[in-house]
Length: 288
Image 1: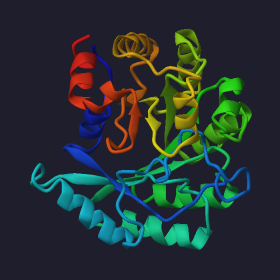
Image 2: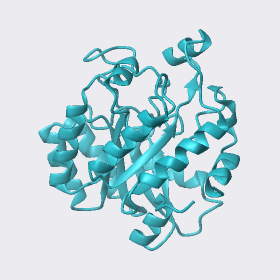
Image 3: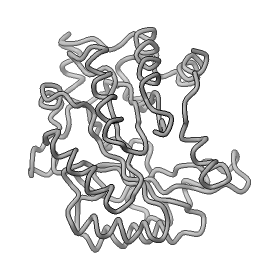
Image 4: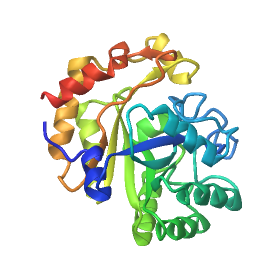
C-alpha cells in the first residue's frame, strides 16, 4: 500500500534520516487542572499520552541528549525532531514555554520541533511565539482532534467543539506552521463510515499531516473501566486493517501520513493485545 509516509517526507525535507525525541516539558492540561475537568480524556494515561517521553525532571537539553543515547546504536550522524509530547504543550506560563522551546530549537542536532497540544490552547500569545520559533526552524503543531462526531467527543471528554478545531487550523495556517491532526481509530460506538467521515473532514481542512492512532485500552483509565464492564469491544486485527486501507485510499497524496497504528506501553496495555506486536501490524499494513 503506497502512501506519503513521515519517514519519506523527512528525508525529502531534510535530506537525511530524522528521528523524533519525545520530551516532557512538565505541562498539564485544562482537562486535568480543573479548568474543563479534572479527570482528563477518558483514554488518557497517567503520562498524558507521553508514556515514552523523557523525564520532566531533566532539562530540555538533557532530555534531548538522553533521547539521542536511546537510539545511538541505530544512528551514526542523524538529525532529530524535538517532540514535546506529554500533556498539552502550549498550556502554561508563556515565558516558561518560550524558554523550553528555545532550548530545543537552539540545540545543534535539532532540525525541527513538534508540539502536541489541544485546539483550545492556542492563545494569541502562543500563536505569536510559535510564529517566532518557526522563523528559526520548522514547527509542527499536532492537534488532538480524535473525532469529528460530537457524541464521541462528549464520551471521551474532549472538552471542546468542532468549531474550535476549525478556528485553530485557520489561525495556525496564518503563521505557516506544519499542522498535523490526530484521529483515534476504533472509538466506542463509531463504525467504519464514522471514522472515514472524520478522515474526510480533516483532509478537507487542508492540513499538512494526519496521524491515525489505534484506540488502546490502558490500565488506570476510565476507558479501561468501561471496557472491563463490557460496554464496548476493541477492533479485531482484520477489522483494523480494512479500516486503515480505506482511510489511506481517501487521504490525498499531499497530506503526510505520520502514523497508521500505535503502540501503548506494554505494561499498561489491556486491549487490543494484538497491537503489542507492532512489527506484525506494520508488515500487514505495508503488504496490503
